[in-house]
Picture 1 (tube, rainbow, N blue to C red):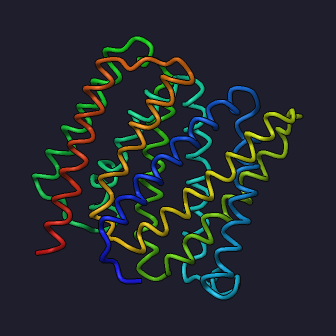
Picture 2: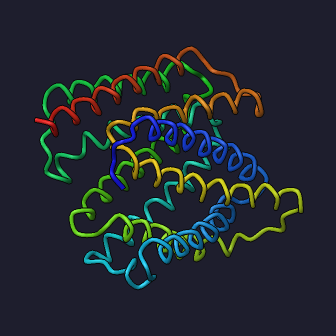
Picture 3: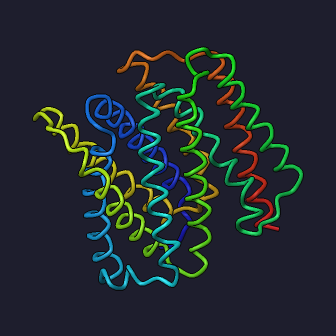
Length: 290
């Protein structure tokens, strides 16, 4: 499909961030009641089923979708993402959605910072300054707020680092493998590693929470479906800035449903991080065009 419909792409990205924010809220609730590893494991069961269905419908066969020149890197990508999700959900429970999502917004800047040593890309002084400013925003989020200034803040920070590494590896394997192949291995590798761990933490879940669990699985698959469609109709550089709306939607949900409060330091710090991230995206687009 030709990538030309920017307006539709923006709408799909906004819808994607809303669905993912709802997914984060459900994850926060369930992980507060049950073991995180079990929750993520069940989520991956459904996600892997979605990946297999999508592979058959869009690639033609599972064998074709699984064909890769880099099996170790593809498995590593899937494992890293699964671990990242577990750590992030733990962060939701320990310090809340708002602070976790605010800290997590640093991941595009981490990608920009590591794109040089990992991908061999040139990072000019302008993007380097923006990266430093973004990390200053994280310091503002962490330092002044007493509830955030704790050892638990390491969870969303580690999650951001892992997600950035996942993103960089995704770019790297894309040099030889198709997006469909990477998507397939993301689901299958995550399924294996979460099942190997999560099965030992099984807990009995009541019928009401099974309903929420099913909704979590559906939002996860639907969110990825929307994201795939988004990138089919529009260039990533045109829609990526709207991905930051996940912080807005997630924060609203946290305040309305979980009674969390938005601290001034968190608002200022996350704004700085987002502006720095938007600038790096803009510079990257300018460099590619030239």
